[in-house]
Image 1 (cartoon, rainbow, N blue to C red):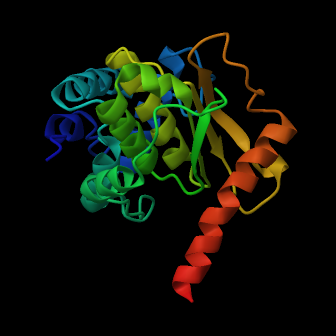
Image 2 (tube, rainbow, N blue to C red):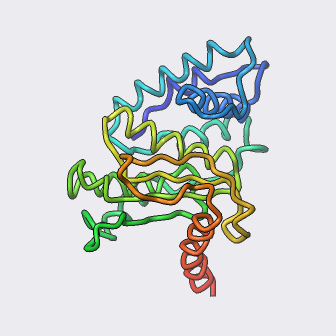
Length: 237
């Protein structure tokens, strides 16, 4: 069971900031520490509290296996504590995501040495891609992660940034390398121009991939997402 009590307490904004605001500040501050452009900078009066929360997140990463979904449960707990108007989503539980990843038996590498690809067109906290990475790590070891490109798309700017933060933070904290991480904010049923890049990182300079901002690359992400929605249509029917 994920233990996020200390992180929850660290992100308690009281009467100063609502739960969704604290989560935005938290995600923004982490990404700024990595050199990414500012998104929702914390006001000066909350800056130290947000920094302390990042310290608690780092400790939580140490207490859990690599790629464990920590921010999904955090998001839903914050929603339960007064943030439901802004944080009204529910994500796949880790146990189910892990079971689905295990059933897929992800391979260690491709036959043509290209990156294996996986995408979640409604990524939420990134739990499905986290579970996939966890399974690859368990089945094939750290080196196999460099054969994978994982992508996510979400309309919700908080969700897209949760996936980006979780994947990058796990790689950094556990000293692991993924072949590629690409996360977009936007509508997976829309056009390439609807997608904005939240994060894009590759394991090595030798990994030859199109920039995430490239229209062709965005179209590739949308094309890869279409089968997921087709499966949902069949299930709904």
